[in-house]
Image (cartoon, rainbow, N blue to C red; front, top):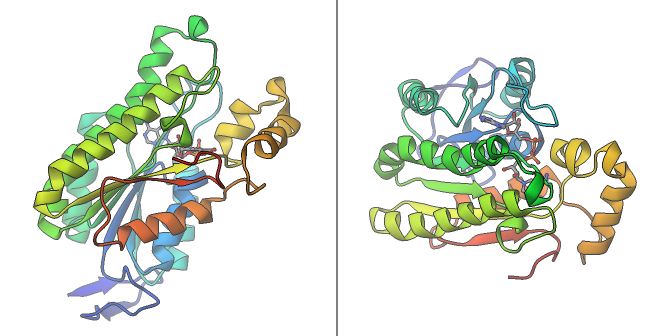
Length: 285
Ligand SMILES: NC(=O)c1ccc[n+]([C@@H]2O[C@H](COP(=O)([O-])OP(=O)(O)OC[C@H]3O[C@@H](n4cnc5c(N)ncnc54)[C@H](O)[C@@H]3O)[C@@H](O)[C@H]2O)c1
């Protein structure tokens, strides 16, 4: 089998991956990959030798209190990932709430790269507010991305994952394990991701597909800098206060921390159904 590498060279794929490139020859699909945690995961998987498909919005629908990614950011991150790895990087515009776009994404990955070995459902949005102030439209929007999006991408990718004995990693949150004030909407959506992970692990285990989740704690991505600790909510002092008050190890997580956990789960043959905290001890179950 021939593989076109990120820098344009054509090379024969080695039958056994090099130990420093344990995902060489594997195809990873990461949603919400244009920035933040998803970008870090895409870079980490490329460093491990995978061909990486980055899926994200190609335009921001503009409905949230903070900005999402668009085509320019997706293209820039795809170029960055392509330059890093020995494998390919493909950027594909996809709104994970739209079944037609998700099906076309998965079809395109399978046609161009042969299938999917590692699916990372990372696309997500946040909204923290008192429950009585949450509009129905906002509730539906957060569930549409965080829960329905993961369902749609899993549904489309499972046939290929079964064929290639692949795995799924869902990016949940510590907010998927306990409730926080103002967090009813976001926490409910992330509890759903943990439930989806456990159920799907039990369902797909007999078919050889592993399903796990990662529960990050606090990272200085858009979610925190433009919403949870926006200027109106106290800015960097609020962010630093949250880190100091809630993380025993005393520092926020980084996208590299989460990428390391994704790589572990992608390569852990006897681990399924876990929701792994990567949160500096912020939650301990
Ligand atoms: N930042 C944190 O502290 C934190 C903590 C725990 C969990 N998480 C989770 O990590 C994941 C990544 O978040 P992040 O912190 O990098 O935030 P982010 O806002 O920087 O990135 C989210 C990405 O998802 C994309 N996205 C949003 N809606 C989409 C849609 N409908 N279709 C496709 N892509 C879409 C955005 O465009 C963006 O690129 C989310 O699931 C989030 O809930 C974040």
